[in-house]
Image (cartoon, rainbow, N blue to C red; front, side, top):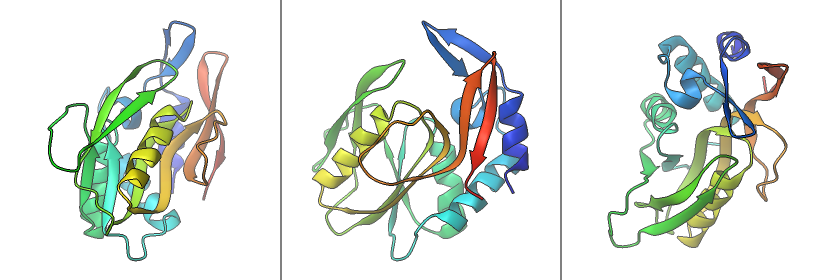
Length: 183
């Protein structure tokens, strides 16, 4: 099921961002282009591993969670909300401060209430900074987090609760190596 994702990861380019070896991949960066077959495979795998029972909302982070959230929402008929990089100043908006291995900034969560049962999905987790911030923001609304899934896990950062990753990768010798999959 994840063969196309694995093959594309193991052949993707690596660039340096300071001391950080950053892999460039369509799922994580949207370049060079997102292959719909890989996106379908990712969506199908998420449906298999996520606890979607009674979930009424998918939470994704801008920007690279959007295409994954769109595919999952269309396949499950569960609406999704995007944690945005822009402050809209809507009632109930929650500021999310994120720090990753290569960036930091503010994100803003809207549309989540204490009545919601949500899943959080994202493209990649490496330092865990964004995911920890998303978890804290969702929990601050009183919503229940049913499950968390990322497409790619790089490293072994602790986010304070269990989550599923579709693939585990290492970057070494100038390339991505898929070392484990969930399926």
